[in-house]
Length: 207
Image (tube, rainbow, N blue to C red):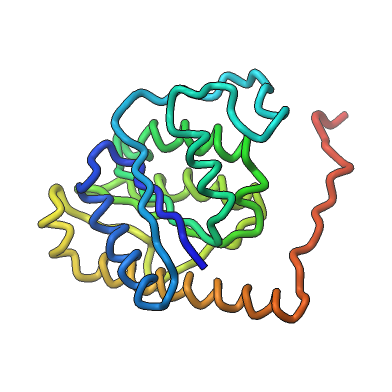
């Protein structure tokens, strides 16, 4: 089993990474491989609703990290998406990536558990978590919880490491994710498969 942890910060080893590293350490101790996928600091396109992704499950734009993320997601069993908080919302980079990756590569994520992590100096964390997790709940992904909302506080990685409760929350969420992944694996070994979603009805307006 393996988990893909996506760092939505421009800073490869900043506050968000520090939180994700806590999660990764617990997962690895539970015998689950953990890879931190850095989105980088180069520009990422927003979705243009061109519809081209429907042809092969990849985005038509190939000049950023979105298709690489979709390919990694295909072999992942679970996910953690980490974001810094900018003006009380997630990083625009992460939201653009998620919008395109989930639209173009939805099958790579469906029915796979995950959770979001927010890093902030002070406020805006719950709104950021809500925005990221909406991608999970529209795609039939089990959302993993913890003992508090998945957030850490600090203006530097060193300050994040002083947030004892925040780091504890990361570790507890990681253990819950590991437990759920093992439960899913045990179910699959007994022949239990995910349900097939109904797709016939799509209401575009109400008269």
